[in-house]
Image (cartoon, rainbow, N blue to C red; front, top):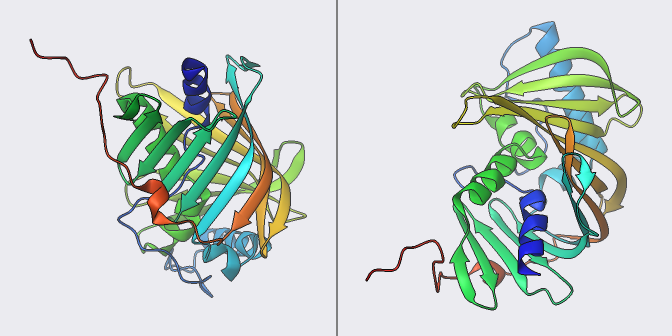
Length: 276
Protein backbone atom coordinates (compact mmCIF):
# COMPACT_ATOMS: atom_id res chain seq x y z
CA UNK A 1 0.00 0.00 0.00
CA UNK A 2 2.84 2.38 0.81
CA UNK A 3 4.46 1.71 -2.58
CA UNK A 4 1.16 2.24 -4.37
CA UNK A 5 0.60 5.52 -2.55
CA UNK A 6 4.10 6.67 -3.44
CA UNK A 7 3.42 5.94 -7.12
CA UNK A 8 0.20 7.90 -6.95
CA UNK A 9 1.90 10.82 -5.26
CA UNK A 10 4.76 10.93 -7.75
CA UNK A 11 2.14 11.52 -10.42
CA UNK A 12 0.17 13.87 -8.17
CA UNK A 13 3.12 16.01 -6.98
CA UNK A 14 2.38 19.47 -6.31
CA UNK A 15 -0.80 19.86 -7.13
CA UNK A 16 0.12 22.13 -7.34
CA UNK A 17 1.30 23.30 -6.17
CA UNK A 18 2.11 26.49 -5.52
CA UNK A 19 4.56 29.38 -5.23
CA UNK A 20 8.14 30.13 -4.12
CA UNK A 21 8.48 31.52 -0.61
CA UNK A 22 10.79 34.35 -1.61
CA UNK A 23 8.04 36.27 -3.38
CA UNK A 24 5.24 38.28 -1.72
CA UNK A 25 1.59 37.69 -2.65
CA UNK A 26 -0.32 40.08 -4.83
CA UNK A 27 -2.95 42.03 -2.91
CA UNK A 28 -5.30 42.57 -5.82
CA UNK A 29 -5.63 42.55 -9.58
CA UNK A 30 -3.57 45.42 -10.95
CA UNK A 31 -5.41 47.83 -13.22
CA UNK A 32 -2.58 47.41 -15.70
CA UNK A 33 0.02 44.68 -15.44
CA UNK A 34 3.46 46.07 -14.72
CA UNK A 35 5.06 43.02 -16.30
CA UNK A 36 5.80 44.69 -19.66
CA UNK A 37 6.43 48.41 -19.67
CA UNK A 38 5.90 48.90 -23.37
CA UNK A 39 3.34 50.06 -25.89
CA UNK A 40 4.12 47.20 -28.27
CA UNK A 41 0.73 46.06 -29.65
CA UNK A 42 1.61 42.39 -29.25
CA UNK A 43 2.48 42.77 -25.55
CA UNK A 44 -0.57 44.97 -24.96
CA UNK A 45 -2.78 42.28 -26.52
CA UNK A 46 -1.22 39.58 -24.34
CA UNK A 47 -1.62 41.68 -21.22
CA UNK A 48 -5.27 42.38 -22.00
CA UNK A 49 -6.02 38.68 -22.50
CA UNK A 50 -4.37 37.74 -19.21
CA UNK A 51 -6.23 40.51 -17.40
CA UNK A 52 -9.48 39.26 -18.91
CA UNK A 53 -8.67 35.70 -17.84
CA UNK A 54 -7.99 36.74 -14.25
CA UNK A 55 -11.26 38.63 -14.13
CA UNK A 56 -13.07 35.53 -15.41
CA UNK A 57 -11.47 33.47 -12.63
CA UNK A 58 -12.70 35.85 -9.95
CA UNK A 59 -10.55 38.97 -10.27
CA UNK A 60 -9.45 40.28 -6.89
CA UNK A 61 -11.04 37.32 -5.12
CA UNK A 62 -8.82 34.95 -7.12
CA UNK A 63 -5.67 37.02 -6.63
CA UNK A 64 -6.31 37.23 -2.87
CA UNK A 65 -6.81 33.53 -2.11
CA UNK A 66 -4.63 32.66 0.87
CA UNK A 67 -5.49 29.02 1.51
CA UNK A 68 -7.46 26.14 0.05
CA UNK A 69 -8.72 22.69 1.04
CA UNK A 70 -9.51 20.01 -1.52
CA UNK A 71 -10.87 16.47 -1.52
CA UNK A 72 -11.14 14.11 -4.44
CA UNK A 73 -9.59 11.19 -6.25
CA UNK A 74 -6.29 10.99 -8.10
CA UNK A 75 -5.25 8.56 -10.84
CA UNK A 76 -1.72 7.80 -12.01
CA UNK A 77 -0.69 6.80 -15.53
CA UNK A 78 2.30 5.09 -17.15
CA UNK A 79 3.07 5.68 -20.82
CA UNK A 80 -0.29 7.38 -21.15
CA UNK A 81 -2.30 4.47 -19.70
CA UNK A 82 -3.81 4.25 -16.20
CA UNK A 83 -1.80 2.01 -13.88
CA UNK A 84 -4.01 2.16 -10.79
CA UNK A 85 -7.64 2.25 -9.69
CA UNK A 86 -6.98 5.65 -8.18
CA UNK A 87 -6.74 6.81 -4.59
CA UNK A 88 -8.67 9.28 -2.44
CA UNK A 89 -6.73 12.37 -1.46
CA UNK A 90 -7.06 15.37 0.81
CA UNK A 91 -5.03 18.48 0.08
CA UNK A 92 -4.30 21.57 2.18
CA UNK A 93 -2.54 24.50 0.57
CA UNK A 94 -1.51 27.84 2.02
CA UNK A 95 -0.05 30.72 0.07
CA UNK A 96 2.73 31.06 -0.81
CA UNK A 97 4.63 27.81 -0.23
CA UNK A 98 2.86 25.36 2.09
CA UNK A 99 1.31 22.16 0.77
CA UNK A 100 0.04 18.98 2.43
CA UNK A 101 -1.37 15.90 0.66
CA UNK A 102 -2.91 12.92 2.48
CA UNK A 103 -3.47 9.63 0.62
CA UNK A 104 -5.43 6.38 1.16
CA UNK A 105 -8.75 5.98 2.97
CA UNK A 106 -6.87 5.89 6.26
CA UNK A 107 -5.00 9.10 5.31
CA UNK A 108 -1.89 7.41 6.65
CA UNK A 109 0.47 8.47 3.85
CA UNK A 110 1.20 12.18 4.06
CA UNK A 111 3.44 14.46 2.00
CA UNK A 112 4.32 17.90 3.32
CA UNK A 113 6.13 20.62 1.37
CA UNK A 114 7.24 23.91 2.85
CA UNK A 115 9.47 26.11 0.72
CA UNK A 116 12.32 23.99 -0.61
CA UNK A 117 11.79 21.22 1.95
CA UNK A 118 9.72 18.08 1.56
CA UNK A 119 8.68 15.32 3.95
CA UNK A 120 7.02 11.91 3.78
CA UNK A 121 5.04 10.80 6.83
CA UNK A 122 4.13 7.12 7.32
CA UNK A 123 3.65 4.74 10.22
CA UNK A 124 7.47 4.58 10.42
CA UNK A 125 7.75 8.28 11.13
CA UNK A 126 8.79 11.31 9.11
CA UNK A 127 11.47 11.07 6.41
CA UNK A 128 12.78 13.57 3.86
CA UNK A 129 11.33 13.30 0.38
CA UNK A 130 13.47 11.71 -2.29
CA UNK A 131 15.46 14.30 -4.22
CA UNK A 132 13.79 13.54 -7.58
CA UNK A 133 10.34 13.67 -6.03
CA UNK A 134 11.05 17.00 -4.33
CA UNK A 135 12.53 18.52 -7.50
CA UNK A 136 9.46 17.53 -9.49
CA UNK A 137 7.17 19.10 -6.92
CA UNK A 138 9.12 22.37 -6.84
CA UNK A 139 9.23 22.50 -10.63
CA UNK A 140 5.45 22.22 -10.84
CA UNK A 141 4.97 24.80 -8.12
CA UNK A 142 7.25 27.30 -9.86
CA UNK A 143 5.17 26.97 -13.05
CA UNK A 144 1.75 26.92 -11.42
CA UNK A 145 -0.96 29.40 -12.39
CA UNK A 146 -0.66 30.97 -8.94
CA UNK A 147 3.06 31.59 -9.43
CA UNK A 148 2.73 32.91 -12.96
CA UNK A 149 -0.28 35.17 -12.36
CA UNK A 150 0.50 36.38 -8.85
CA UNK A 151 4.29 36.63 -9.02
CA UNK A 152 5.73 36.59 -12.52
CA UNK A 153 3.31 39.25 -13.74
CA UNK A 154 4.34 41.57 -10.91
CA UNK A 155 8.03 41.53 -11.88
CA UNK A 156 9.19 44.37 -14.11
CA UNK A 157 11.49 42.16 -16.21
CA UNK A 158 8.73 39.77 -17.25
CA UNK A 159 7.83 39.85 -20.96
CA UNK A 160 4.46 39.00 -22.51
CA UNK A 161 3.80 37.63 -26.00
CA UNK A 162 0.56 37.07 -27.85
CA UNK A 163 1.14 33.92 -29.93
CA UNK A 164 -2.11 34.20 -31.86
CA UNK A 165 -5.28 32.12 -32.15
CA UNK A 166 -5.02 28.41 -31.34
CA UNK A 167 -7.08 25.32 -30.66
CA UNK A 168 -6.68 23.48 -27.34
CA UNK A 169 -8.83 20.55 -26.27
CA UNK A 170 -11.07 21.23 -29.28
CA UNK A 171 -11.80 24.75 -28.02
CA UNK A 172 -10.99 28.00 -29.84
CA UNK A 173 -8.35 29.76 -27.78
CA UNK A 174 -5.83 32.57 -27.70
CA UNK A 175 -2.27 31.58 -26.86
CA UNK A 176 -0.19 33.81 -24.57
CA UNK A 177 3.40 33.21 -23.42
CA UNK A 178 4.88 34.71 -20.26
CA UNK A 179 8.70 34.93 -20.11
CA UNK A 180 10.47 35.79 -16.87
CA UNK A 181 13.89 37.37 -16.35
CA UNK A 182 15.54 33.92 -16.24
CA UNK A 183 14.21 33.03 -19.71
CA UNK A 184 11.77 30.59 -18.16
CA UNK A 185 8.41 30.61 -19.90
CA UNK A 186 4.85 29.37 -19.54
CA UNK A 187 2.26 29.31 -22.32
CA UNK A 188 -1.44 29.59 -21.46
CA UNK A 189 -4.27 28.76 -23.84
CA UNK A 190 -7.28 30.96 -23.01
CA UNK A 191 -10.81 30.03 -24.06
CA UNK A 192 -12.13 32.70 -26.44
CA UNK A 193 -15.68 32.27 -25.15
CA UNK A 194 -15.36 31.82 -21.38
CA UNK A 195 -11.92 33.53 -21.09
CA UNK A 196 -10.88 30.77 -18.66
CA UNK A 197 -7.57 28.89 -18.96
CA UNK A 198 -7.93 25.67 -20.94
CA UNK A 199 -4.34 24.46 -20.98
CA UNK A 200 -0.92 25.47 -19.68
CA UNK A 201 2.47 24.22 -20.92
CA UNK A 202 6.11 24.77 -20.06
CA UNK A 203 9.44 23.10 -20.89
CA UNK A 204 12.54 22.17 -18.91
CA UNK A 205 15.78 20.33 -19.62
CA UNK A 206 16.75 17.17 -17.80
CA UNK A 207 20.17 17.84 -16.20
CA UNK A 208 21.20 14.21 -16.80
CA UNK A 209 20.69 13.98 -20.58
CA UNK A 210 20.01 17.65 -21.43
CA UNK A 211 16.84 16.63 -23.28
CA UNK A 212 13.89 19.00 -23.29
CA UNK A 213 10.65 17.91 -21.64
CA UNK A 214 7.26 19.54 -22.06
CA UNK A 215 4.86 19.51 -19.14
CA UNK A 216 1.19 20.35 -19.48
CA UNK A 217 -1.94 20.81 -17.43
CA UNK A 218 -5.49 20.78 -18.84
CA UNK A 219 -8.32 22.39 -16.86
CA UNK A 220 -12.01 21.60 -16.99
CA UNK A 221 -15.24 21.62 -14.95
CA UNK A 222 -14.76 25.05 -13.36
CA UNK A 223 -16.95 25.74 -10.32
CA UNK A 224 -17.39 28.97 -8.41
CA UNK A 225 -16.15 28.62 -4.82
CA UNK A 226 -16.38 31.79 -2.77
CA UNK A 227 -16.38 33.88 -5.93
CA UNK A 228 -13.32 32.07 -7.33
CA UNK A 229 -13.58 29.72 -10.30
CA UNK A 230 -11.67 26.52 -9.54
CA UNK A 231 -11.12 23.70 -12.08
CA UNK A 232 -12.41 20.44 -10.60
CA UNK A 233 -10.84 18.28 -13.30
CA UNK A 234 -7.07 18.59 -13.86
CA UNK A 235 -5.20 16.45 -16.37
CA UNK A 236 -1.39 16.45 -16.41
CA UNK A 237 0.86 15.47 -19.29
CA UNK A 238 4.53 15.03 -20.02
CA UNK A 239 5.78 14.97 -23.60
CA UNK A 240 2.25 14.26 -24.80
CA UNK A 241 1.55 11.35 -22.42
CA UNK A 242 -0.97 11.58 -19.59
CA UNK A 243 0.74 11.28 -16.20
CA UNK A 244 -2.03 12.09 -13.73
CA UNK A 245 -5.68 13.03 -13.52
CA UNK A 246 -7.50 14.50 -10.54
CA UNK A 247 -11.18 14.96 -9.88
CA UNK A 248 -12.20 17.25 -7.03
CA UNK A 249 -15.37 16.60 -5.06
CA UNK A 250 -14.92 19.20 -2.32
CA UNK A 251 -13.16 22.58 -2.43
CA UNK A 252 -12.99 25.24 0.26
CA UNK A 253 -11.33 28.63 -0.22
CA UNK A 254 -9.96 30.82 2.59
CA UNK A 255 -11.28 28.46 5.24
CA UNK A 256 -8.36 29.16 7.56
CA UNK A 257 -5.88 26.31 7.07
CA UNK A 258 -3.74 26.21 10.25
CA UNK A 259 0.06 26.37 10.03
CA UNK A 260 0.23 23.37 12.36
CA UNK A 261 -0.64 21.09 9.40
CA UNK A 262 2.73 21.90 7.84
CA UNK A 263 4.89 21.63 10.93
CA UNK A 264 6.98 18.46 11.13
CA UNK A 265 10.53 17.24 11.68
CA UNK A 266 12.51 14.34 10.24
CA UNK A 267 12.54 11.38 12.64
CA UNK A 268 14.42 8.95 10.40
CA UNK A 269 16.27 8.97 7.07
CA UNK A 270 15.87 5.76 5.02
CA UNK A 271 18.36 7.07 2.44
CA UNK A 272 21.16 7.67 4.90
CA UNK A 273 23.79 4.98 5.11
CA UNK A 274 24.17 3.57 8.58
CA UNK A 275 27.61 3.88 10.15
CA UNK A 276 29.32 0.77 11.35
